[in-house]
Image (tube, rainbow over all chains, first blue to last red; front, side):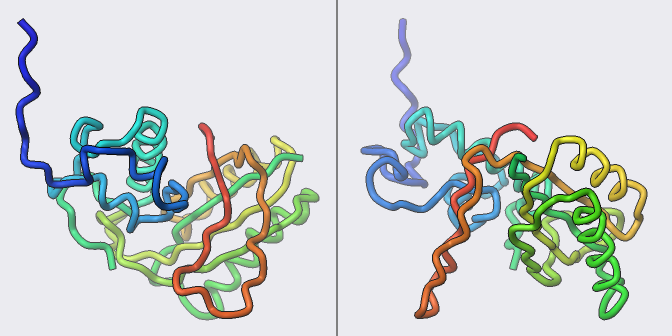
Length: 84
Length: 120
């Protein structure tokens, strides 16, 4: 019996469309920490696609960028300490 | 000739002229092997997201260059040997690299160059 997706609080992004397809031309890059910050939770975890509303292509790119940013200490693996 | 993008973090204690010495040394490593430096970008000292080798801060340097593939191997070997570099990461830029058009007015948000990467 397919369970309805649990209606988690929509913290990030609109469910409508992918942020990158439609509106801005901002590139997904591991150096652009500000953009990636939308896609990690308070605990520093990557927000799943069903919540971030990304399309598959961009979600994969975002995930890859986040992992690269973590590798070079731009993003933290755990708590979401602000990197100023 | 393929386009690579390397970002590395220099030990925060190293500053001033010996920082520039380290930087010149690694630029030299690249130019000795006939690599063509496209862009060298220093971000200065930033707070790291997590302590790396007991350092809370680090000086970020980004280098984008055109090179053969064995140049990268040598470049990374040198960085591993040198203990002033605490972390580095090299990427292959699939889409090559076009220098951002020189913008007359200072752009509000620095236009980052187009770089779609793949596995390094």
